[in-house]
Image (cartoon, rainbow, N blue to C red; front, side, top):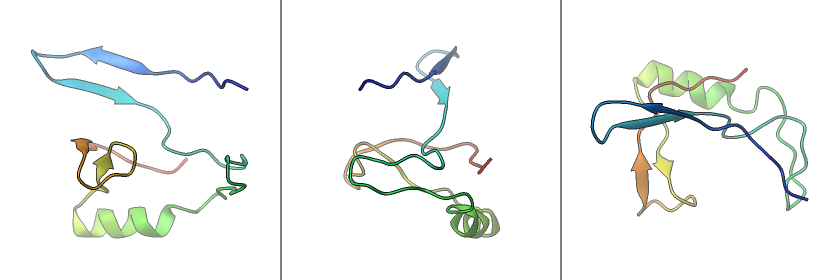
Length: 76
């Protein structure tokens, strides 16, 4: 089954690009049977906020393939 999602692109100066969306959603079963529950990211996001950091933005979870930087992240 194909899932459709919304991707918002903004036309910014020269080569700068941004997008917004969800990195994960609650209550859905993924392809290996995992279900993400509400609150799953709260502790790590609080730590990043305290430390003034953000998680890495990676292509396919590969630490050798960073593809950008997060400007804002929250759980809703």
